Figure 1 (cartoon, helix red, strand yellow):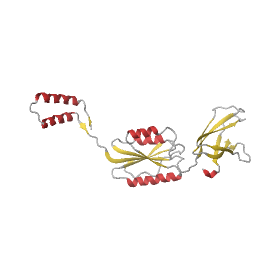
Figure 2 (cartoon, rainbow, N blue to C red):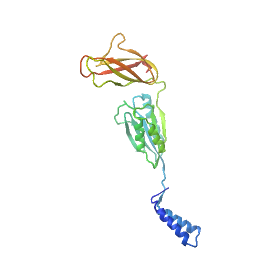
Figure 3 (cartoon, rainbow, N blue to C red):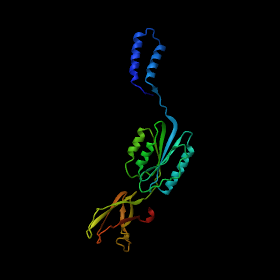
Figure 4 (spheres, helix red, strand yellow):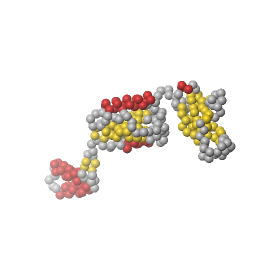
Length: 272
């Protein structure tokens, strides 16, 4: 319970003092009436939280989620729609390089066809949780159902998880990660912005791997394989779980804009 005018309690205190000093015939009913008047002066109000539920379904649509995981998301959305009770509301938030509101809180059913265009190159889980929390109403019970493989880019989502806990919004997680998955991908490359013709330089490729695994790589310069020979330019490499840095040294005789690309594969290729 809250009071709209707490300063009125000071006036009520004065009434209590006058009552005790000047009223001789005191009884329980008169005392109760004075206490009630004092309370009403402060304009009390009682906030009752609705028993209806707002469910925010946060979907990971990044490239790391398999086709099986996407199908599982659709299946769970259908299940959520079937379990909604009268008064309940559902919202659908997707995230890749940023979060998108596919469905604002409504009576349902849950939206299963995602219509907002997105790029799968990114997994901003923190933004997905923040977007869901921004729609939470303090007057209703709320929960977040997170469907993700747990991989993310951008900010650490721990801060948003703590914010949800402070607002009494439980987060239920359904792990979409494939068992024994071997995922190998190039996450970026670094080099100097300006280079001189006929001067050696290095390109540092960043390659991420989910587990330790053998593999190989080859480099393309301006669309052509560098060092094309019997092995078709492939070079063996033992990838470690996490980020791997592959340094490639080169020099070019002609000034201008040149493009470099790294191709990676597991050994054998069907491990990935």
